[in-house]
Figure 1: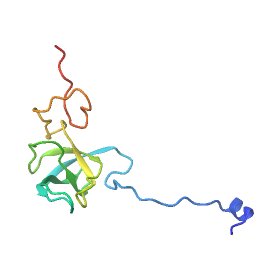
Figure 2: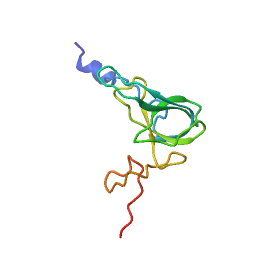
Figure 3: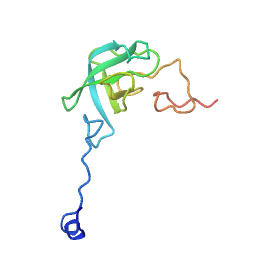
Figure 4: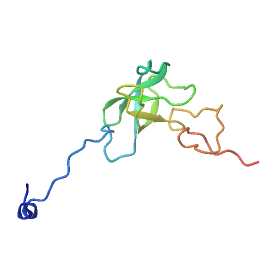
Length: 127
């Protein structure tokens, strides 16, 4: 067991935990360019076709990001904004794309009054 004098001389160090969003440490979002737009099947109990994109960030890092929502207008060379946030049933997908920024348009079909920012929906017009 460690003594009080030993602790006084050399305090305990906290355990190092690497960041879960390693592509942009200390920054909430980063801009990137789509290299490839693709689909992927989810892990075992689920079944669907999820839309994903390979994105090259401005710091030249290549990552896989999820395309949220119904339908999208993304293709190769589209400029997008990437945020952290993994998709639980897609292995290796630890990032989301943000709608309504750069070339990734918000969905016209969805008119939302609440929780608009996650969907990239503009503020509804007051009548």
